[in-house]
Length: 240
Image 1 (cartoon, rainbow, N blue to C red):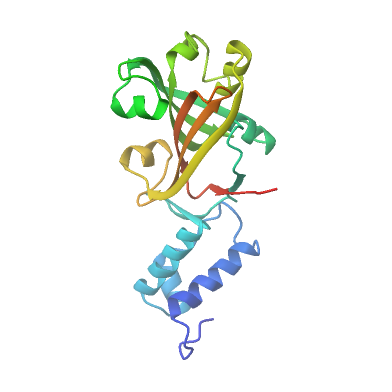
Image 2 (image 1 turned 90 degrees about the horizontal axis):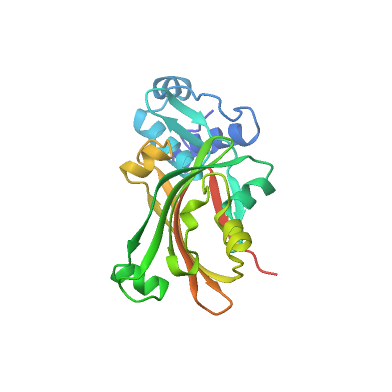
């Protein structure tokens, strides 16, 4: 139980107690947590205390909320080592998961000033735009928006990019060798569309990755902005 005479705030004590129950498996993944009212009655605390503790558990990635249903223990998050030249498809298969994709939009357009600067092409150059929802075991994991210079992979959109890895198509069909990538990552809150597509209840934390990929010639072959679910994905660096 909680110690109301301790120097540690009650919400922090409640957070630690519930966290231990989750990590020990007493509250298993996908199990529903008691309601705010039940937690207040069980631990003799106010709703404000309960909400602060739950907010911290949500920030920890240990719980998730489902609109109209309640709060549940989250599944273990995918620990993703930064491998810039590894595709999402390869990453998921390496973990024993089944990757799938839904193409939300694709087409060829003339590069605006931003696209031209990122892809290092003249403004007005044809650019392939590809937007996909990426899933693992049918669970939405990420939203990806990719730009590629059309001249380096003409006819790319004739390939089924819902079924095939983009990197695999570039290598096998266009004989392009991707040699390095630059990536930056930031934490953010999902906007309304991102939350809907990733099946998140707002406010929801996401990780945003921006990656620019290069060929041997130092030409930019791809820029991708990825929005990952913060409750299912952890990105970390690795050095060898």
